[in-house]
Image 1 (cartoon, helix red, strand yellow):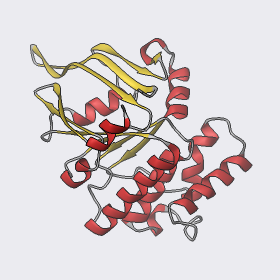
Image 2 (cartoon, helix red, strand yellow; image 1 turned 135 degrees about the vertical axis):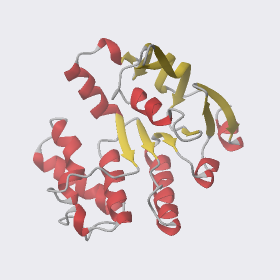
Image 3 (cartoon, helix red, strand yellow; image 1 turned 135 degrees about the horizontal axis):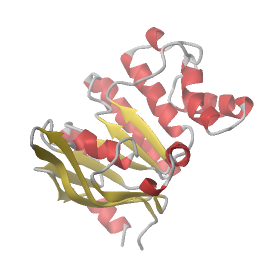
Image 4 (cartoon, helix red, strand yellow; image 1 turned 180 degrees about the vertical axis):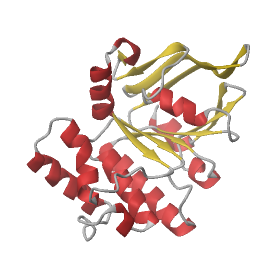
Amino acid sequence: MSKAIVIACNSLSKSYAQGPNPVDVLIDISLSVEKGERIAIVGSSGCGKSTLLNLLGGLDTPSRGEVMIANKNIATLNTNDRGKLRNRYLGFVYQFHHLLGEFTALENVAMPLLIGDHSVAESTLRATEMLVRVGLENRLRHKPAELSGGERQRVAIARAMVARPACVLMDEPTGNLDQETGESIQELMWELNREYELSFIIVTHDQKLADTMDRVLELSKGKLCQGQQNQAFHEAAK
């Protein structure tokens, strides 16, 4: 029995003007992601993986095609409503954590909830709970500069998860981490996937990480090709 679709794109294309002729980065890409599904997107450097992630997250505008989040075409929404939809349904984690340096770990994690009009008390409580969940109960009042690389990435993951989004978009989430820290981050991600049934779309060059996903899709020459599918996911979807 199929699950609900949390994010999808139809005939998605992206071109950039470069001289007299446009350069096609993405060509007619269609993709549907079910609740709780974990998808890896792989491909050579510069093939458009990050561009695709930005389009799916509503951070960039496609040349053609549409992106549906929670059954809403984000192109039809105004800037304010699009921001609210992203805040409610999506979480973002990048290779570089992009934490706000002047704020503590607790304040960084609480930010999506405060932007979503939750009270300070509720935002603080939920941010604290999530930081405890990722093993940073002793780092709540530390600013990013006072944290290790692995700790900063855990804060970024906590920030992405705190609003309980339907889907988390990740761009090389373990790319700047040593092997041990990267593996612990990966274990944490899958624990949260099982606990909250979050969907993940992850751009990665890490084959070991890709091998743990339900599906692996390869982006090549602007096209998204079906790769391997995890047998456990295939059985669960029956």
